[in-house]
Length: 71
Image (cartoon, rainbow, N blue to C red; front, side, top):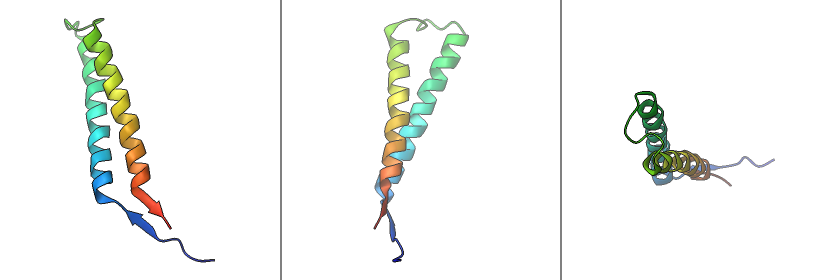
């Protein structure tokens, strides 16, 4: 059996990590904002923040996963 060589794309890893962090911050900001009766609660801004946060988490995870290439 030949050993697999793993190649890591540093740029993709960094972008993926940033997207995950931004996504987490947006989701946390939304939950904290709603718990303190912010003016954005129930508004389109709130749902946009949730959507961006979830997309950031998914996109960052996918980029991080794709950054590791197995040959």
